[in-house]
Length: 324
Image 1 (cartoon, rainbow, N blue to C red):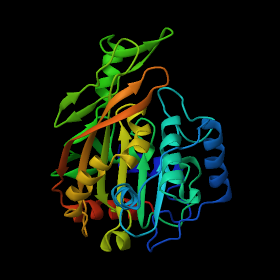
Image 2: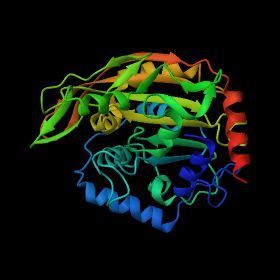
Image 3: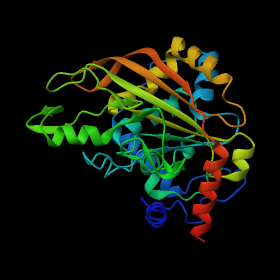
Image 4: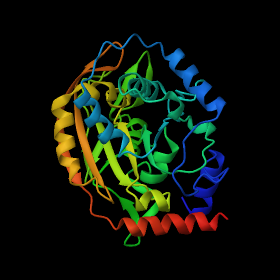
């Protein structure tokens, strides 16, 4: 995607409107419509009561891992799955709704900080932002990581930026089109989404119709969309499952102290002025009837990323200046 296409894409989502990339730490209050979309999505999701109770220590670690430092944090959930059509009527995909429900109910996050992507009315991308959902359903995730791990807007050494771990949606769609690997229920085929580590694909264990496991990928990068936030340690945190199961597993992660502790210890040394790391978590068991995660496994891989973040910030600034 070239710069012109990028600007058109984010303009269509309202990311540029009302000075969306303006500086300063914003209050992060959504419009009334944005709030109602979230409330509507949660009601339509049909959640039961959350019978999980987190300790203060679990909350502290989870907030640091998913929501960043003490700056204001907003959450941008996946709005629309372009393959399955999920989210079209509610403004959020079912997995994203499930994850947001966990953040609101278990981490006591203000629901007004859940921003539906198709209705952004932000004074700026300042503070911390948590982006839920992968590139197939979250447009901001796609702009950063593309459908095959290659960023659509950022470069490194003249080539599209590609992080060590990513969702390889191109390979999944190719397998579906060639009739190789896919999931099929009631005569309907859908892609078997997978994670790639340095080009090596990690395909979740599955049968013809059901997943037996999945993976969750967390990527933390400095907030290169806002100069002031970048300077004071603001961050962007991308959270996505290989499949929707992995995204729903945010709820399990919040109470998985063995994972939280490992991530907290690993990330503490990298959450300074320029945090940049990735973590891959195994979802060990899945309910075949509902596609909901049952058990979180282990931290499969943690990797600190060595990238010139200042270069990414400058690229972002050049793109934004071109839109003026």
